[in-house]
Amino acid sequence: MTDPQHAQQNPVTQHPRPEFPAQDQPHPGWTGPMDPPPDHGEESYRGSGRLEGRHTVITGGDSGIGRAVALAFAREGADVLFTHLEQEADEASETSRLVEGAGRKAVAVSCDIREEENCRALIERAAGEFGRIDVLVNNAAYQMSQPDGIEAISTEQFDRVMRTNIYGMFWLTKFALPHIPEGGSIINSTSVQAYKPSPHLLDYATTKGAIVTFTQGLAQMLVDRGIRVNAVAPGPVWTPLIPSTLPDTVKFGKQAPLGRPAQPAELAPAYVYLASQEASFITAEILNATGGTPLP
Image (cartoon, rainbow, N blue to C red; front, side, top):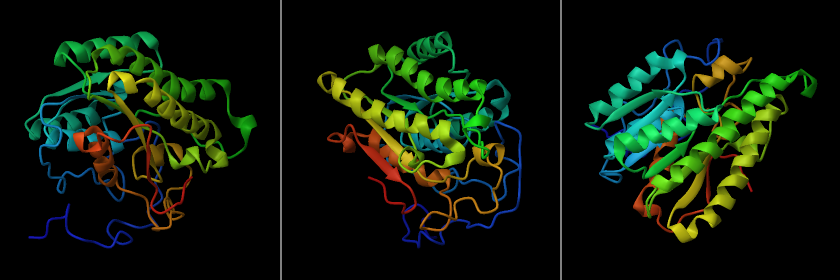
């Protein structure tokens, strides 16, 4: 039988290509109705002990990239505490099932990271569950398309984007650092939007640019503590965020040179690598996974 994780394949045709069926969901979106269904690596990802015994925290782990990373971390031998919004409890149950199916501990925590005290409580929960945090993945994010220009971006929306994407990352990192040992790492999710912003995602793109700067600055700050800080910058990825925040899903991802969006399973190995000891000389790095879009 062909090993789907390691068999050589043409990346252009490896996964579904647009056009996709038109589909729209209320925010935050759900995996089940998506067509085609996202691939998180359920049938393909095979671990090799690269994160054996690690204790990890992933924000936004209920679906999309976060679920794929949680699954991969677990199959590499890590326990996983992950966050989800209250309305995403069913999605979170599926992530827990996948982590536990790999024989690892799963802790799903309903947490709105827009509030500082929620972030503090989350880290205290993780420290209580695990004793330490070897890997922190700041992945949770909010976006909402506004094609009618900056005038259409309300203060409420701008505040939500900033507090979810920037404040939450800042607070969680600050509170987690006392629990991260030497050799631990922090991995942030930025985006191709940091370098090539889409006008209809102005506020979201702004935060992703800030995440690049935060990652590179924090990495230098933490060198003497033996903690690495890196980020992954995906291009278009087929997750529930897309039908719940963008007006057109039919051609989503077609603009990438590979002609399609990534599946979450294609992003997870980047996070595994950056979390692993194999990346011991890698810090302050942005790992671009854009489907061929050249970035600085």
